[in-house]
Image (cartoon, rainbow, N blue to C red; front, side, top):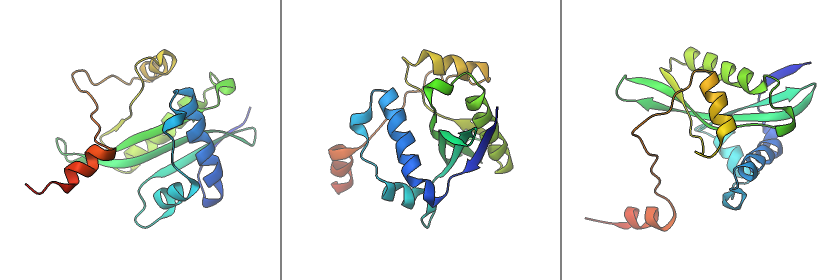
Length: 161
């Protein structure tokens, strides 16, 4: 069996959107996807570049995606790789594709001087959580992700006090 991981190109924009939508569907969040190919063009290939993506190919066919960006840890003064999305087609899970993606991202994180990788997982997603534990990932106990968006984001930005 043949696995190839490669950086996404602009020609892959329809594929990136396809995999993002497939992940959202799996997570029961497809109704939240408003991104277009143009959004991904700006994120992945615009100036400044905001994110990176790789495509997983199994026997020459695209079967998965990882999309990430870099942020910082002020506590250790180093960058970190934040994995926004990772997806492998359900029929091909269990073949080492996800493990290969994470290993490649770990190599990229180390090469970029990152002190860690981080990502979020839905609390009901037991298969993914089990996989993350199998590669050594641990939850961040005591921390809860916060989000400010939509009208709340607009309202806060408009405040002048």
